[in-house]
Amino acid sequence: MVFRRFALIAVILAAPAWADLGMNFKSITPPALAEAVIKGVLNRDYVMTSEVQSITTPLTMSIRNVPSDQVLSVLRSTLASVGIRIEDRGGILYVERGTPSPVAVDSVGHQETLTQSQPMLAGMFSKPDLAADGEVYSYFPRNRSPEFLAQVVRLFGGHVVSSSNAMAPGVTSPAPVQPNQAKADVLIYRISAERNAKLLKLLQDIDRPQASVNVRAAVLEYSLGSESSRSVSAVFDLLRGKLGLSYAAGKVAANTMTFSGASLSAVLSAVDGDSRFKYVAEPSLRVLDGEKARLTVGQEVPVRGQVTQDRNGNSLQAVEYKPSGVILSLEPRIYRDAITLKIGHEISSFSQTTTSQIDSPTLRKRGAETVVSAQPGELIVIGGMDSTEESSSTTGLAFLPSWLRGSSQSVSRSQVLLMLELSDASGIGPRGGAVADEGAPRAPPGGP
Image (cartoon, rainbow, N blue to C red; front, side, top):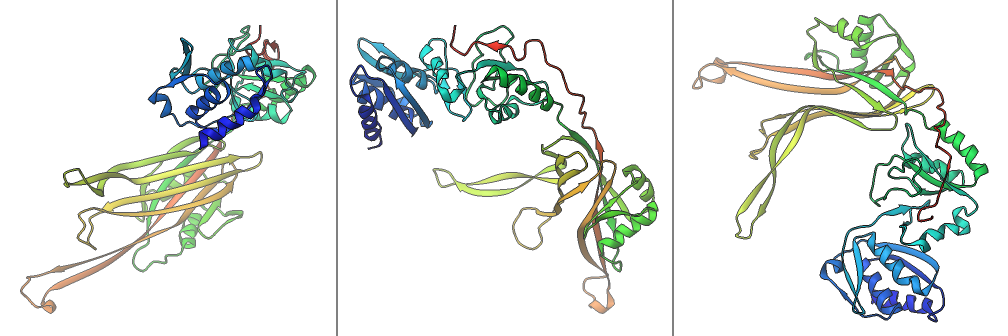
């Protein structure tokens, strides 16, 4: 029923053989598109292989005023982008699997095939909504991605022809662009010459090194003892006393403290030799603004997973590997006057399972997630991750009554402290100048 509906739409748009056509399809599979156009519009005989029928990649196309003699060419170019070719053999169209052809992405993400063999498609740039009065320019980013700069071009009223792959200076046609290509190194856009002069200055001002921050961390475990207070503020006061510092104004929370004028090295030196503090890890990371960083110091422990059965009914035990140790994740946002840092911290370990008969280790973990704001040079201390362990032992002969045997019980309490020191390493330099070939007009793709 779906195929018939698309075919019926195409037949209605077809009208006389001499009229221009309009093809509008939304989320249609390549086999359905081929059948709708070849059978419903062109009324041609065709053969479609099973490999083509298994392709389910959805396609959306909206093309107006297509000459009737160019319908097959448009179909070929569209299907070529998903690896399907159409060949005419003795009057019969064979729809077979081929190699994907290059495509470009316009300002709204609509994929169109642009090749030098299809001047009709290249001529679509003459439409009024695609900046018909402008030239095609290229800009080679220095620090920011073409995808990021493409958003600036669109907000400025330009039409992005391509934001992927390089076009060398002097080349009039861009290199092939794949639809799923993630990386790029050139921005090709179309805009009027008057607006391009202002846009180029804006691109050069924005295209500066992305800010980054150095984060040095230390994970310490503080033993509280059986009679000690479990308050987080008691630990903070202890550190404050050792450093001889005061809290930063407005920087005290329930489980987070920020010191101004203290360094991580000073803290580690102050607690060195104190048996209540145990050193766990001291990672260091450099993170770009808005990016995520994750560091794991530990090991992968095998644990029992899901039990399945094979065709013969035999049970198969799956084994999964779980990370344990110190896991730290960071996501900074760097502003002119402050750094907002999203922190995820976990310290975990495996122990023997004693509460059930399951032959699999038990994961014990302490973790915290928070978002803090600090200045470069400040020291952030996060606590509140407490742990209590109780143990008991009995001495003496087993056959003696309990009152003749010795017994002891102990309770140990500890708290994990995460310390973070931020230092600015943004590397933002002065505004860069234009290169010789930037802003020079380029011939539109597929043109002469």
